[in-house]
Image (cartoon, rainbow, N blue to C red; front, side, top):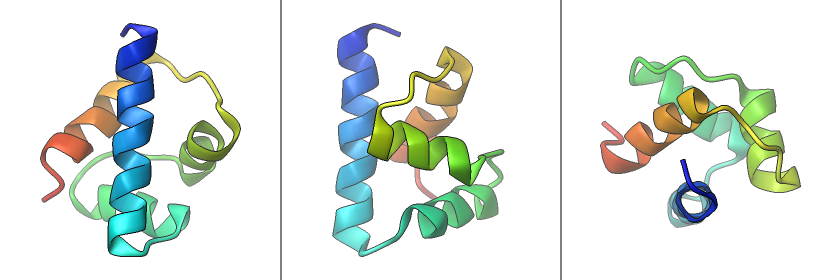
Length: 69
């Protein structure tokens, strides 16, 4: 993924969290309940600390943003 695509995923996830009033752990739980393998620590570090994550992880995040259910 390009840096702009990575930033878009991050922005979309942060907007989802704000819109639904969730914590990062709640977001991870929603992702897990929809069948995605998510590590809440990595998600937290990606959203709050700017951790660079692998493209496969970003694809999971992107998939959730595109189809949350």
